[in-house]
Image (tube, rainbow, N blue to C red; front, side, top):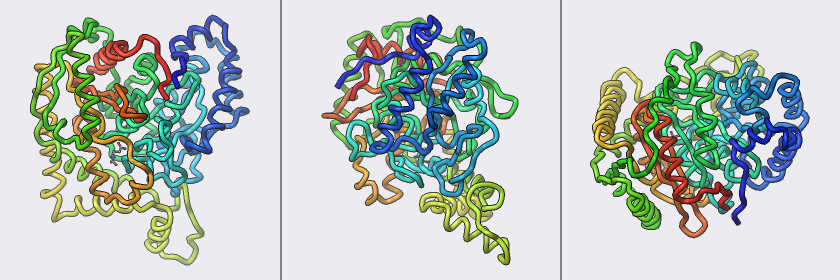
Length: 484
Ligand code: GLN
């Protein structure tokens, strides 16, 4: 089924020209979400149309024509805090947590008139590759509901693919959580350079790796909204924003682009059919005049191991604050020693994967093991960054398929070992570990299942990545469509 949809840019123009009724669009968007949610489960929390309309009325009472995205329906991954809207991070331990503040990225979008319609499903605290570790629901792939949406931002990708209304999703990636589900659901997912978007109000998974980014149906939707959130924030000391990006955009035209394809990344792909789609895509790029070179990116398996050490070490300290006393799940602690109460609450309210990561991370940080694991992992990280930088000196972008497989069936994930699941991140982890901007765009299908490619740029070349992807997208269609 191919349906034309309205881009964010078109929507904003129509709203400002007053040729569409924003309240009507929002009411329909909420109704549509209510219709798809029972079968596909993209949402942990879906807002009522009364709440959505109330927010819209507030925008309407101001000078909304000066705003960048007035009345644009947005969804927010549920590990990003939203004032007055329940934010669970996919965990039972935060089941009833309602933040009293907005994350900076949310605040920036709301300031420009965006309206939050729901909180999208995530693996618990972002721990997962298939969004099957969420305490509340398991999003089902829009292209085949027996299959996963990918993770951890599975809900965001699911609703981005399903929505027929104008929409972008605020999502987050630590080691691939934007790229992976975007590829599996056939949407565009952009992960900015580390630090470009403030992490203030994000429920941390691993502070040195977490990045807030966007998903949309087209590169243009993402590129239109991205500058609104790419701002330096005094509330996040690691935030740098994106300055003077207008000057950094290269001359358009695929003919001016040079792509490096690392052979190790292709060797890591076990699914022949994914490789075929990729090769067809590269042939098309070449025929449009792009330069393609083959390079070596060794250490991708080492990068994966280093990532799991660093990510779990940071996660294990971040989760220490969830003790059943300050927020979220709690019980009557009377008569119990603190340690006993703390352990009981955490045993009950953390899922299996969260517990596994606490154990792994705590072990890696232990005094006797610190040098052997954590410091070694940091060295690998530096090497990976150096290798990427060297390749990007000679090429504009690095290019390879986003995931080594097509989306697996939900049932089959249940039989996979944790190490098998972690191995699925081999292609998405390297750019995340290096903090490089990258995008996953849909490039083809194997039967009914989408296949995405990943385009990686140098630090702070965020707009260059978006610009190039926009050109590439046009190779496939001038008319953005919903491909379901
Ligand atoms: N699958 C990876 C992990 O479980 C990445 C998840 C993420 O980016 N949040 O750590």
